[in-house]
Every structure is written in structure tokens, then in C-alpha cells.
Length: 336
Image (cartoon, rainbow, N blue to C red):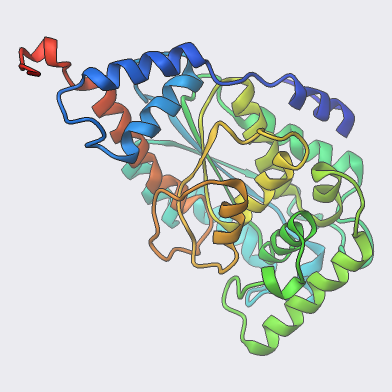
């Protein structure tokens, strides 16, 4: 088990993360050119297979152990009425996950993925970021450690998701702080707040931005405006990179958290693809800023890693075609 003691140690770990194995990717590209299909006939599936091969260091890999991790936490800012649901629902939904009754349980089973759920100090919400930092350095590092150590060493594809009443509010604040613009540009209805609720939520995000403006890199912004489950997702995404495990990003909240990594070390998300485009309005702009085109667009806004879980089947299909198809030589098919 790895333990970071402060944010600087985590920053140092980010610098040491491995890069894509170009030899494996080029080998995958060469194999792709020999498969029994016209060039480019499988569209983005061909790119996905080569990207995955490069990160796994194997020009002909398969996916056998996908992992989904859902992190749950509570937010002090929820007391300002930014959600349509009370904070008690976070713990209730964790129990639902644990008993197999949530959407993510069904989607994980359908994708053949192992699901882990980690509740992070639900009885101790983060601080209200309109009054001070959401987390101390000790708290944010503890959450990063929790995420880092939740990734299975035998996993070969990772999806991370979250549960936390009110957490579209810190996600909107992170997006605005890292990418600029007004609070209204990034704040959506989340769980379905009405017009008055949206005005209130936007006010809260704006106050947080004013208080913490220009206060450091992506990790420091995460400490000030984020939450434990967002930090845990950051830790897990970074750990996956260290193990050369490709990652599928989920929706708006996951992407906002991941943005903190990219704004701390450029290229830190090269091992990630966007699983889907959620119906939370600002998600598309987050993905555009990262240069990531979503694999799916189904109007989801559930969280829980649901969109990422659905995208597992797309990535698995890409690898099944790439690694399982015969080459022209193997199949005895003439090319000319």
C-alpha cells in the first residue's frame, strides 16, 4: 500500500508516471493494417485498439479484468441547498450499491466488470468552500491515497465514478476555476434543481470562485473547491497510469476531477478516453478542453460511473476485433 504524506509527494509521483509504449502502439497499427477488413472500416474502434495496446505495452492485448470503482463522500456546501436531495441520500445510496440495487450494479454485471464501492468519511462532510478551503492538505492527501490504493493491480481497464449529494457544485467550481468563465457558464441543474435552486447554486459557485481565485495548481484547486470522492478519483486515475491501466472517464463530475490532474501535469490524462457525453450542460466543454471525443451520447446524468461502465463494452469490442480477427495471410484472403 502506497501512502503519500503531502501534495508535493503526489506531484512528484505525477512527474514519474510512464508514457505510452510507442513500439507496442506501432505494432498494433501494423497488425491493424493486415486484418481482414478494408482500411479504416472499423472507424474509431481501430484508434481505441491501438491506443489501448500502447498503454498496455502489448500489440495484441485483450481485456479480461475491467474494474469499476465508485467513491462516495459528503459536502459541507450541500447545506446551502444546492441539491434537490438531502445529504443523507449519499449513505443510503452506498448501501444500495452494496446490496446490488443501483444502476451501476446492473451495468457492471452487463459489462463483465468488478465493482468496488468506497465510502469516504460520510459522517464528516468537507468544509463549505464559500467560507474556506473544502479540505485541509491532510484530508485531500488521505482521499488521494484512498483512490490510489483502490486500483487493483490485476485490472486491465478502469472506470471511476462517484456518489455525493451536492457534488455537481464543486465540479462546476473546479471547471470554472481551471478553465475560466463565469459560474453560470459551468453550473447546471445536477439532480434537478428548479430555477430558484439553479440561481442559488450559481451564487454558491461564484462565491467559492471569488474566495479561492488564483490559488495554485490543479491539486491545490482540488483541495480548495473539491471533495473527497473527487480527490479519490484523481488518485485512482493517477495510479492507473502508473500501472499502465487505460481509464474510461465518466461524466461531468469525474471529468472535472480529472481536469485537476491535467492542470498539474500536462498530458496526465493521455491514458484516458471519455466514456460518454452527459446531459449536464457543461460536460461537453470540459471534454473539448481536454481534446477528448466521447464514445457514447445517451443523455445520461446519473453519475455512479454509469456512462463509463456502458463504454467498457465499446472498448472491449475494439480489442476483440483487433486481437481476435484473422489477418489476410491467416485467413487465406487475397489482397490483390
